[in-house]
Amino acid sequence: MVFRRFAVAGVTLATTIGAAALAVAPTAAATPRTHPPLSAISTGQYAGSARAADAPDVDVAKVQAHLTELNNIATRNGGTRKSSGQGYRDSVAYVKNKLQAAGYTVTEQPCTSGCATGAGPNLIAEWPQGDAAKVYMFGSHLDSVGAGPGINDNGSGSAALLETALTLAEQHPAMTSRVRFAWWTDEEQGLNGSDFYVSSLAAAERSKIKAYYNFDMIASTNGGYFINHVSSAAAQPMKAYWDSLGLQPEENTEGAGRSDDYSFERAGIPTSGYAMGASARKTSAQAAKWGGTASRAYDPCYHQSCDTTGNINATGLNRSVDGIAYTLWNLAVTNSTPANDFSLTAAPATGSVDPGASATSTISTATTSGSAQTVKLSASGAPAGVTVSFNPASVTSGSSSAMTVATAAGTAPGTYPLTITGTGSVTHTTTYTLTVKGTGGCTGQQLLTNGGFESGTTPWTGDTGAIGAHSGQSAHGGSRFAWLGGYGRSATDSLSQSVTVPAGCGKATLTYWLHIDTDETDRVAYDTFKVKVGSTTLATLSNTDASSGYTQRTVDLSRYVGQQITLTFTATEDTSLQTSFVLDDAALQTG
Image (cartoon, rainbow, N blue to C red; front, side):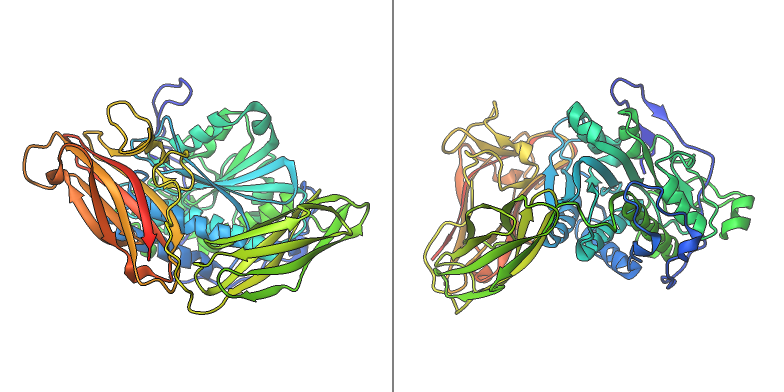
């Protein structure tokens, strides 16, 4: 949760520190519990008309496992996951990988205006089922303050949403509406990521969002149970769930205007959400109702370095994540069979080939209710060097398509689960498992895509705004390049790309051209440029390496043969005097 709310769409800077409350007694471990009995919750009144018993009891231990990884990410990156740092980008990558593996349509949205210098992207994930004209959004900010790892603020909301999304994918219920999840950048600097997202939406897209639900600090150790706009229509499923537990939730007065729901609220979109409190102090009445300590902050580690996994109220976290799932199921999940529906199968469902060979399967559909419909086929999860095609690419339900899975000679041996998706009035998926045999021969090849940056920004992730034909610098080849750094103040820019280095190769070599210019005069490494694979730094350059023109650099990546890796270039500047790291014509060659 941000301390202050900055100007949004012309509104002047406002300070909104509420005096109300939030609370809950800290608990060292999760308290096992089941959902309240069906009779305890009014059902059938929300859009999805799913029964309460159908909503899952989300495993809080899995939520806590995500929090542990976010804490580890912060530890590896100077104790923080601030929006402009590598800790935030690593957090985005962690969440993104989990969602993509589960079958979500995932998008990184760079914040190209209004965000702090070097801020990483928003992460948007949509479950590809349900009515696309009726969208319910669930969001949380993924960044922390610079002073700490931000595990309650706001790893708690981010991890709860991630596990809710994974649970939805695992259960794969029938959907009446679309569900879209968001992890926001730069909230701690003024709600900037969510404001950029909302302001970027066309009017027609905004109108599709029927409600937005925000989760910011939902595991405060001395917290309470608070709901944004507790008496609103949007809040009713959330309130119904906490009411069923006898929690008597209150209005989130402290958080009003201080988190990402405010960006949606200003756009006229109904909002609600859970919170358990920040720096405001618990009243005596709240301590009597919820437990905990009166006259003490809801979160004593708010915006501090002690906001670690030790700063989590597992009972409150458990009640929050189950309430999120209950709300989602009531709004967007249905028990009824769609009027027009179909099934999707792959036969065979597995294939085993040598590198360079192809496997085939028949993708069959059948009309299971109503009328036949057109089903568009697609595949996801294929590793580097593998392509999937369908003949035909669309079928009428009741018909079949021939799927061909083609591998390159350098495809790394291994087993790869592919997700086959059929999209009609509803969406269904099936799994095909590809096994690439052998130790793999090596055909020398260049693995990086768009290493010269001439083809836009894809597939690079991170600070893709650094890519372009910028005035003030020039390309090594072509017209475009990546200009990292050059701000003259504390900032970090980073670009990443994931590749598979084929097994069977004796060598893998990264080359890139780098121009460094600087205003620093001391022979001290104030500003740095690092090349990483995963969290391992393989090369470091600095302002002391500045020279005129480009210099080609080489890094041996042979140790990564047979592995899928994420290659990252990161430039970090200190508080004054610019250093520019201008990158171009990167290549990863095997041989």
